[in-house]
Image 1: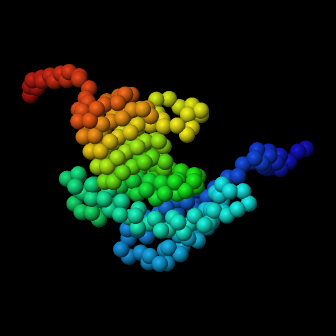
Image 2 (image 1 turned 90 degrees about the vertical axis):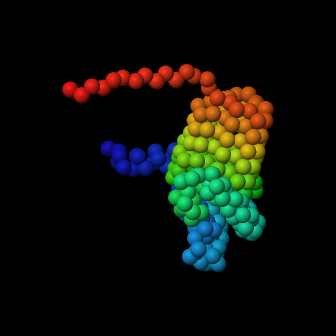
Image 3 (image 1 turned 60 degrees about the horizontal axis):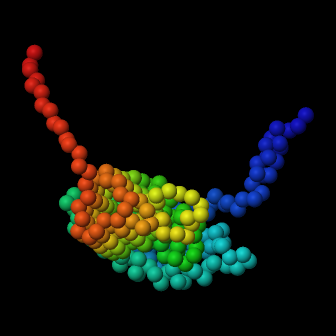
Length: 267
């Protein structure tokens, strides 16, 4: 009689032969991301010690996820490290945008510690630099970590300018080829996506461009690589857009709202 345990083990191992999927890559990436946030923002963090630890973790990540055959990706670290001050400068502008835009924000510290939108933007900025270096899997795991924690999905390939603000954040989706310029504000549930998805679109501009000083309200959907939202425009809640709008536009859905009142009598 066949041993069911051995039969199961053999079947599993056979299915895994063509995979190169060490699950610890995901776990180490999430720890790396969390430690990087702590290093840049925690006033009590031991920065020299953390930098050394980040370097060690990145060495593990590069061994697990390097796309170069028979070569090391560890040399990326030195370049990435030099980008930390610039990343921090951009994030300070983002945090100020939250503080300036949201009357519920009481301090910059509250933005850093409590705002899911800021955390999602921070992880995007961490991951985007690695994406630009052609190191694709780790950035994707970083942004999916933020997605899971915040409900906000920002692809590492998106190009996002300075002073970016996402209010409430939950349900926001920003695709890989989105371009967002400076001083843009978006609200929860906004989708900046593609008109349709097929594999042959890889490497093409599939997602919208949002120019300076645009506001996009909750649950608006804007689709298409040739769709441009002109600067200083306001896109209302629940709007569906698949074509460009000129600068200084105000786009809204014209629906009649009927409000009825009824008399309530005490019995």
